[in-house]
Length: 187
Image (cartoon, rainbow, N blue to C red; front, top):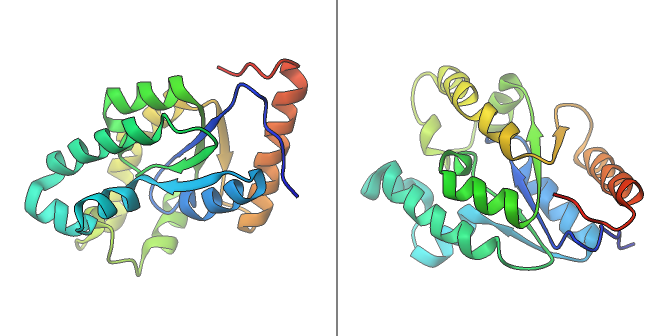
């Protein structure tokens, strides 16, 4: 079954910390809408031919963020797309503006404990490759949470329930937005 979103919404962008479920939920949401799913980190890797940890090692976080900004600018202009962004995408004002102004932004929120559980064996997250990943996640939360909230049109907690349950909550909220606006005009 394909779900409908308000006509004015042509793009949905997922923001949130690593381990919040952006890629998993993004794929499910895109499938439910009959849209394309894209992941900004995967697109960076595809374009550069290198993985994110290598880019961080060679170019540093600044070089990675430059690449990320370019990719988000391009992908956020595509129609009928669900885009999962990297956890730090909101750090750049240009990214926040592109996301907030070009589509519906959903902040997928989760606890630090859940992030630790979901990322504990993932060696593909350069910011967590240290002896104190919990401290890093806490620091990132303090820095990034206000930015996630700044751009979010919807906030969905991914802590409880399976991915399909969270998907159903997102779809209900989209339907509710359609009913409330009538015309489908969402900021």
